Amino acid sequence: FEALDEGGVCDQDFDSIVLLEAPSHVSISGPGLMRITRGTGECTLKTTQAGTALLRVSYGGIAQIAPLPPIPVAFSGGEPKGFRFRGCGDATTPLVAGSRVEMTLEAVDEWGNATTKFNGEIEVVVTASPRISSGVSILEAGTKKLLPVSWNERDSRSGHNARGGRDSATSVPGEFGGIMQLPKGSHPFTVRCLASCALNLAVREVRPRSGGLTAAIHQIHFRAGRSTHLGLQLATGTRAVAGERIQLRIIACDKHGNASSRAGDTAESPSPGQLDLVVDCGRATSEAVSATAE
Image (cartoon, rainbow, N blue to C red; front, top):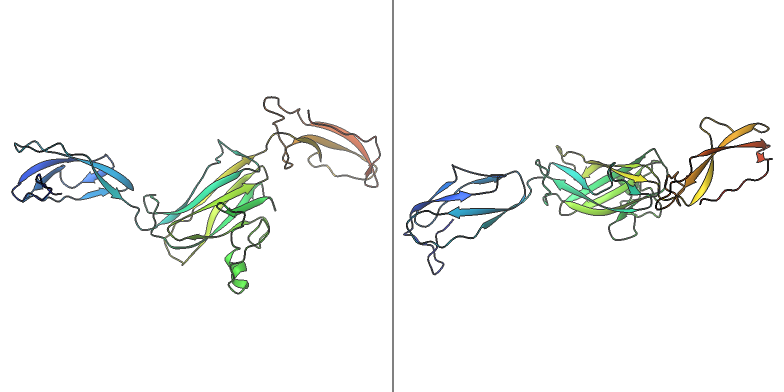
C-alpha cells in the first residue's frame, strides 16, 4: 500500500498506522492495523475463496486524507486437485426427457475454486439408472457433433480423433461419453437423454496422467413428459404362451415411449389398466382393441 500526495506520487513523509478491513473470508496478518513507513506499508492477505475481495482502509490521524474508495483485490484458483461438473437436473428438479442440458466440466483447487491451471484431456463416461443402451447424446457445446470416442477406440484407430455418428462414444454397451479438452481448466458440453432415468456422469481418466486428482461424479435426472399415446405392456413376470390368456398393462407414454403420469397441462393420465387377450401361435385371436389418449 502507498500513501499518495495530491499529485498521485508516493508521500515519503507520511508515517502512521491505518486500519485495514476485509470481508470475513479474507484473513489479514496482524490485528488489521498496518504500519505505513515512508509512504508504504505491507500486509499479508489469505483466503480459500477465489474471486474479488473489497478492502477498506481507514485513517484516524491528524493528517487531512480524503476518504478512500474500496480497494479490489482479485484471488484466483490454485493448483488443480480435482474436477467438478456444473449443471442442472437434480433429483428435486428433474428435466423432461428429450431436453438438452448445458453442462461444464471444470478443474478445481483443493478448496473447490475453479482454476485455469489445468491443461489436458479428460475421458468422461456416462451410464444410466436404470441401464439403457441408446437414447443418450453427449454433444460438443453449441454443435451437433458427438464428443470424440474413448481413448481405447481412438488409439486403435492410429490416433485419429474420430467422431462417430452414433449415441455411444465407447465400445461398452450402455456406456456413453467421450474425450473432452480442458485447455484452460474447463469444457462446456451438452447432454440429451430420451429416456426417463438418472444419468451418472464420471471422470474415467485424465491425460497427461497426474496423481492426486480427485475424480468428479454428477447425476442428471430426467422424467417422462406429457402423455401422447397409450401403449401395451406385459404385466410383470408374465410370459406370452400360445393358447393361454395373458395380462397386458395399458400405459400412458410420452413421445419417446416413457411411461408417463402427465396426460396434459392439468389432467392426470388414467391409472394403468389390465386387458385379457388370448394368444394363438403368437397372434392375438380376440377382437382387436385400440385406445386413444384423451
